[in-house]
Length: 185
Image 1 (tube, rainbow, N blue to C red):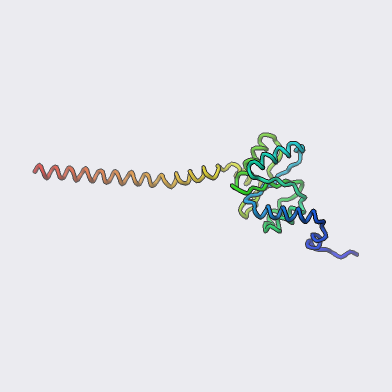
Image 2: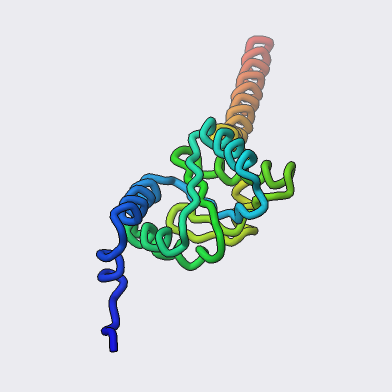
């Protein structure tokens, strides 16, 4: 009867190519600011290449890997929670910049081609379901969010400055009227 093996022993027996795939994916997952899980079935090789080109132009890496290797890489990268959403044939879009860009690009691609549905995502330590990824895709770009925040902060300050200017203007007008009254008396 063969003895039971642990995942570690199985990984050691895995071929060097599989180990290299896991190490490479783990390194990318560790650097990624966001990871979006998609179902790439239904795409032709040409469509997949076009998608990869489009993603690369945005600084996004698209990887197709076996689930067992992807789960192992996620564990090595310290994001084992991502393994819970890796089932069936999946592709991983790894973003290294702004958090929402991979979700936006993939969501737009799905909207136009009706292929490549978004399954889940991983952003800042949180696993997102498909709805969460869609919400992330709908967020405005970072610079727009910062401008909105600045506007929100600036608005009350502008009103306060206007109110203070009005008060000082009224005070000056009252003092001037009082001075004129004293001079007349």
